[in-house]
Amino acid sequence: MQETTEDDRLVDALGHAAFRTMGALTDLAADAGLSLTQLRVLAILRDRRLRIGDLAEYLGLEKSTMTGLVARASAKGLLAREPDPDDARAVEVVLTEAGHEVARSLEAAMRDALLPLTVRLPAAKRRELRVLLERMLR
Amino acid sequence: MQETTEDDRLVDALGHAAFRTMGALTDLAADAGLSLTQLRVLAILRDRRLRIGDLAEYLGLEKSTMTGLVARASAKGLLAREPDPDDARAVEVVLTEAGHEVARSLEAAMRDALLPLTVRLPAAKRRELRVLLERMLR
DNA sequence: TATTGTTATACTCTATAACTATA
DNA sequence: TATAGTTATAGAGTATAACAATA
Image 1: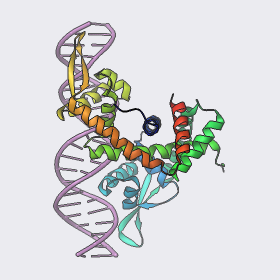
Image 2 (image 1 turned 180 degrees about the vertical axis):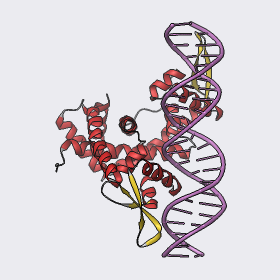
Image 3 (image 1 turned 120 degrees about the vertical axis):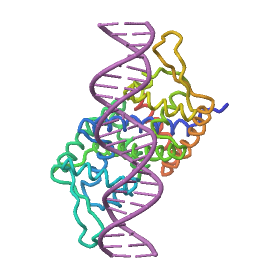
Image 4 (image 1 turned 135 degrees about the horizontal axis):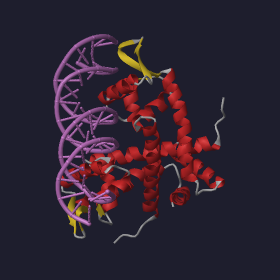
């Protein structure tokens, strides 16, 4: 019989926080008619243009998966495929103006969805949490 | 033009931590031939038996989705469907012995996968993080 | 030859709607 | 009538393998 260690509790808390956060993000994306992955794609492309392969690597997905994701988001008018002038094999993906608008509203929706998860923490504790998470992620 | 507020940074950190955590959990589940949802099902059933509908509600899924998830996990021998003696319409889902074994090894794998995410924090800070997360989740 | 991306295929996850059996 | 669960159907996300075009 094992006792519950500090590490177990940390892992448990990390997992639960992640599921709760992802749940909120999934709902918010669904409200916009998007999947969590499409949400990530829009967020990533807000400040850069990436090739299909780089996008796939960034998300930890196969290139063939990326082809489909980009096709569906393109069909919705959220992003566009542009030829890479330096490499005729490559395709660069960029947000359209509509994509930027959706990304902006999604950012606001994320705030509205995630901030309530922290209501049990007073402002000072929220700040401590933010500092710890940033340090962990750095 | 907006400035980045404390709230924005907190939301950003929460989101990034969640994606990184879920990424690790997804990989770990995939190594065991399972999806993230199947991982959750096993974790939930470790200490209880639930009806299809209750499982679905717990996970935020439709009952029809649950039917398929349970069918596939049953086919793998990880869980079993049992008739509810008090209600002939209902089905209770329980882990098999094999399911318990997989759940145990998954718990260990979660520790091994998530703890490294916190390496940038010294022990005292990890503890602070755990306390803050538990309070947030309570 | 190696790389970039697509296509074909198959499976899982998910929801909606219609249905069966039981309460 | 209402509830528990299943089935049928459809679409998205995902991977693997084979492929075409370009480097």
